[in-house]
Image (cartoon, rainbow, N blue to C red; front, side, top):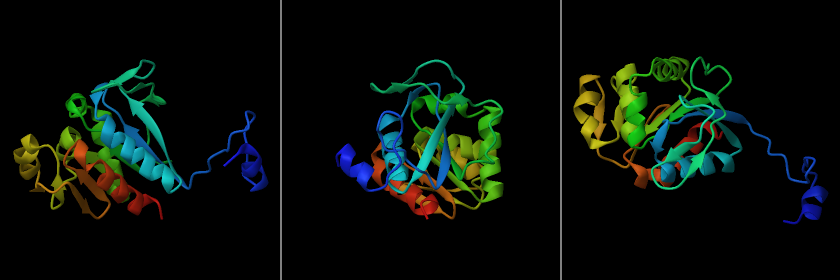
Length: 193
């Protein structure tokens, strides 16, 4: 659609003539300081964007480029420390090898607990499922994730699955990067209403 057609359709434009996206809600993304899973993150963000849900990213390395496993890199919106979930419709813990660096982070654990207690979207995939287990939010829940986490999830009272995506109430977990599209659709179904 051309700028002229967008303007004619009544869309609000910014100073550069680009359409201003209006979001119904915003989801918090907790990104590992390095080696995050790019593929699944792209699907998650795209799926949420398609249902008019924005994302805001935080990490322990605010102010520096966060580098993914392959080629993606970006700067997060703010530091993880002290962030509140109050203004968000949920939280997604980004997977990848770097997610293990957040498994004992007190702010990450607090956000997982806060989302579970508030019945907000709580999501993770691959290695980041460890954060959910350590936060104590998987008890009685069916979850999937990196196979190396099976014992930890079961010890925390969760029911470990090998399915690509598991949805248990407001909790969405993904096996690995290959779960991207299904994971994104599950997120959108919960917060895109």
